[in-house]
Length: 311
Ligand SMILES: NC(=O)c1ccc[n+]([C@@H]2O[C@H](COP(=O)([O-])OP(=O)(O)OC[C@H]3O[C@@H](n4cnc5c(N)ncnc54)[C@H](O)[C@@H]3O)[C@@H](O)[C@H]2O)c1
Image 1 (spheres, rainbow, N blue to C red):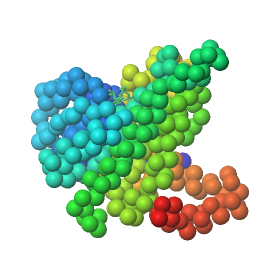
Image 2 (image 1 turned 60 degrees about the horizontal axis):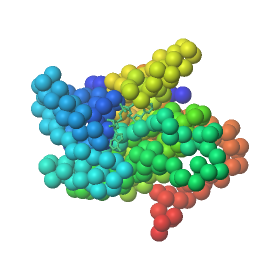
Image 3 (image 1 turned 135 degrees about the horizontal axis):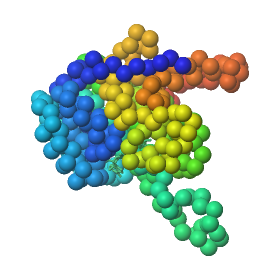
Image 4 (image 1 turned 90 degrees about the vertical axis):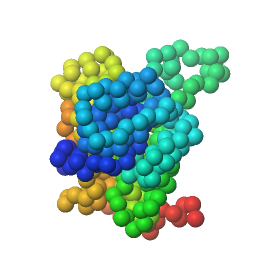
């Protein structure tokens, strides 16, 4: 797999760029906010944890002097109108939105196991919570839909670089037993990148990518997770490293190897990154067989940007 390196020297390109993101109050999102702030971007971030949003802004302002303008809005990504309000707030303030990052997410919670072995004919009658799908997938789809409209405002003919980055996971593409609902939701995040990348690039001039980290040192990775990884000799990612990959995909529009930096999925383990989509395409014929691979490629080419499904 081709290694994908973070390029911190490109972050300066984000100076005065307007960036909207979710999940900026803690963990990986907070590190992204910190690096955007240091780069001088104008940031409007949303998070359900309003107290942590306020602490983050106060802390950033006290620890770093920056030309960055930063504000937050209490946002529940499950609500379409909250996502809308976030973009509207940035657009009304700056007259444009340049980059949109969907970072908010939650993992499986104790006591909410959809496939609890204790379920029986009586307890199965109560519907389970759908919050993992609502936050990790529906909220991300809402965010991308609204982002596509706000990012393309005033951007006829790709006059400016505009991009979306979604936080996926190793669970977006590798089996992770036990992440019963998180895994299908995160598969959906990679699915959203695959289903929109040609369309967004060709029709709107918007790039879309995903970063897919293995376990990362935030409150999401429990002690049990950390022990499981380290017992296999694999270190957890640092949230700062994940932020570097997100900012790299956001700040570099073109690369000599991949061309336009769009449709990529960057897997990160122990802070090292690899792009997984291009090599997957290259292995297609050995995976699916020559004939099926050729048929799939021809059909995909015939579908072009994909509007045939909805015309
Ligand atoms: N930590 C890991 O091991 C790991 C690994 C792979 C992917 N990820 C992904 O990285 C992203 C960030 O997670 P993290 O590890 O920083 O966890 P975190 O818990 O530190 O941060 C998640 C943020 O999302 C916010 N959030 C949760 N529900 C929300 C909602 N309904 N509306 C708005 N905001 C909400 C939280 O308040 C928090 O600020 C997530 O998408 C997660 O799935 C994390």
